[in-house]
Image 1 (tube, rainbow, N blue to C red):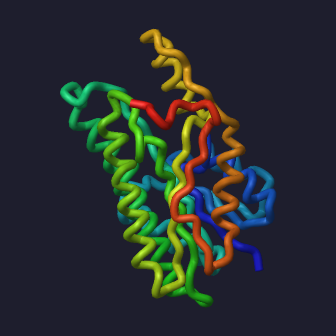
Image 2 (spheres, rainbow, N blue to C red; image 1 turned 120 degrees about the vertical axis):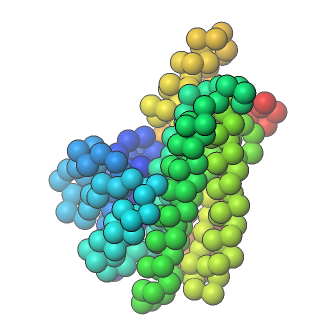
Length: 243
């Protein structure tokens, strides 16, 4: 039976790399993102891809999208909760409330809403169960300066991951978190340019496809096994001792 994964933030970066790899590995893939044109470009030519535009911070949209995915593929085996953003960097006394709220809405509330919707499908489907993989961050452990909104949401994702893991035990639903450090994506490149602009040395980066392979490893585990936390990063990245 073909397995099905839902990937949020699928139109670019880590999400796109995961879509490409999972389709190549024979999975059916539901792509979620704000812009349907980007999703359709990523999914072009793949019959096992299903593109759905969605604002993950909107409760009604998320519920409708997961109903549509379950109807299309009959089940959801895995959710990769990947959608997220980094608002403009600033010292906490200069962070705008609007930027704080945007980070909470997308990075945290969006992950919660998608996890809740996927959990409901996984609990009800036969055979019961599935897997939820949350995209944490190195910032869930060791933040960059001037990143209070992003860092707060990523610390919260760790708590969400643990709670889902506990709630899922009676229903054969596993939950894990992948903490990613400096994959070469547009967001990381922008952060690197900002660092160079103030005279900091650019950090080491890694191929985004290495992240996709790590997500695939987590997703392919048998139901009785789970990677609760994984850190994948550029070998020379400043992580231990960063701050």
